[in-house]
Image 1 (cartoon, rainbow, N blue to C red):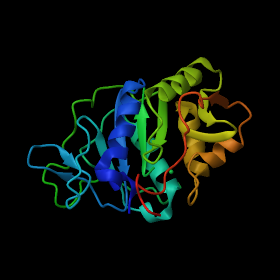
Image 2 (cartoon, helix red, strand yellow):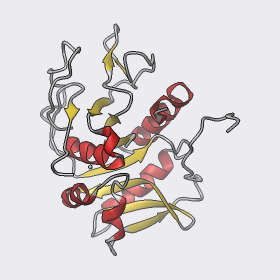
Image 3 (cartoon, rainbow, N blue to C red):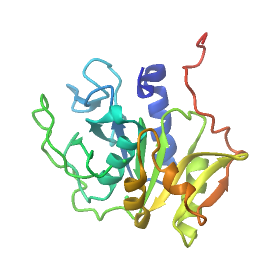
Image 4 (cartoon, one colour):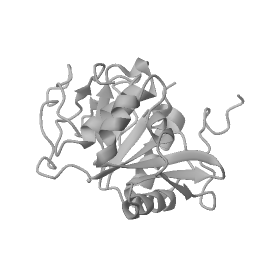
Length: 231
């Protein structure tokens, strides 16, 4: 199943908490196989019409219509979103021509999209329309549930302090998340993303990425099954 649904949405909530407490101002959840987010009766958003899982308050949902292309599609969509100062509610993002989690994209600050069918208010614009576009984004999937705010804050600080504006969490010798990208790198990441490779292809070509040791704070292990699963 889509990992955003794992453990009743606990992985989603944990990732949002880590990003928000780690220093990210605006947070966007990129959805794919679940279908578009659904407006609940209380005015909030659900991950989908049938899931019953609420998207944390203040988090903007983005649905990627070409999600079956792989991780690249959601990476491109998230970066396209972060590049704009404001966003209509729950837009559809399709970028098959230009070539981008389920990730979450967060900015230490997403793009106008088409209104979604079935959402009567899907064309409205949120209160952040007048904000400037982000200068950095942090990309983090929902399936690293032990990555907390301390990891996020450390990687953001490293990216801001570096000349390259690129930083990535490492756990031992293993690259992990979050990945923090300065604005000057977004076009390159979007252009190089393909299939199930998001920012990784671009980052492997860079000798100036800061590797941020975080294994004193978390394992960074990505999870394929909910806790307690027999698999």
